Image 1 (cartoon, one colour):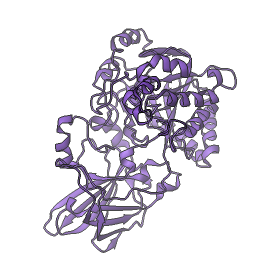
Image 2: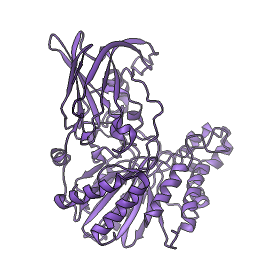
Image 3: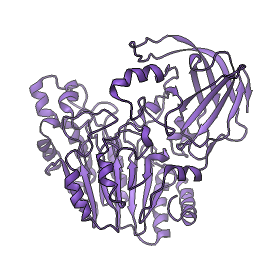
Image 4: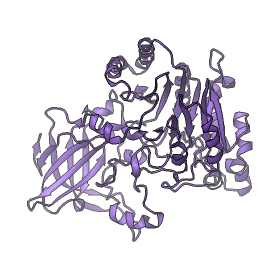
Length: 522
């Protein structure tokens, strides 16, 4: 997509066609076809995931239902079968910050990579770092271990060196470096005892000066890689991202155009094209192996107008914590839309392949085993490109030909909400209910804008997250029709006409569907 576009799109189209033959078989065909067409293997290949969130059950005896390591083992096995040289986890391995949770992650690792070895005997390096969940066990772990003395033994926060040695038989250091096949990796743990605020995380705390000197010695003609849990500020997802650091990593890495940074924390889906940022350096969001885009998946409606298009969060970056209640009062949604039931979990990651002239990022959904769209490709040496340049080149998402919009007046029960004056209990409210086909043509849909107008010309819009846009194109849920319920008090009084427009991650707009209340129109 970003490397020698004419040649690369042709290759991607061919590979993508092979991938559609099947989830598991297709993935093998992708690798085989790419290698055959490239003629040379990558110089380095590594897997990337984040936000694993393995959790102990309330009694501390087993892993909690839905928080087991099954998908993690499947992910490790896929990386192994793709002959990776390393695996990166960008934080939040242990959901409650407990050593037994990290031990479950380690057990999954050593089951797939005994003694850190691939089946052919090669060493596969671990590039694992703490996130805020790993580092805050003395509070969160209290959900399982009520006794303070027991909790002090079980929480990694109390003694991260001991916990790390027990699980991985290596020394834990707040930050560390590794060299793999001649490429440098810089890894920064979230510091124990520090929780998150979402808008100015501590990030690389303490590693800046140490890493700067080492990075200055790196070969400027080849990339090096950096990993921390929070996003480097003002990179991926733009200024509205939840989970940004305090700017320290951005300041550090901006001196090195060959740097490629990986970060998790926000659980934003990899179908969001803003998951990769090309500025003074390259920044890549990792997606997550659990709770993917948690706010988006609950399908809450929310008021339009967030900066830079799509956000999956209730609090855009830059809103001070003391202004949080005022923000809720102005923007928190009525939350009338039903949570989807029988929806398969979505768990994503990447394989990064480094060639002489480019770096390729292959995105995968590990429950279905399907690829997530075209690979991202960054040419080497990397050149800065703004989101706007990719937005201009992107195809907007479109509704299929013959699509019909239906809009009816109804009532619906809210799920309750936070307000400046306190929580509001669930209650019935007037609403409109819309039904329309999913936008499945062209680019990947990120949001649907619902715009309502009355006879007096008053117009107001809300946006909802496009659940189908989170899935791979060959997934059954990708083409699932949309039913949206919107509170009447979020729209102009006496509305007569409603228009629904699909938007991609950049805010590009497809053609709208429009209908009068009580009618159906294409």
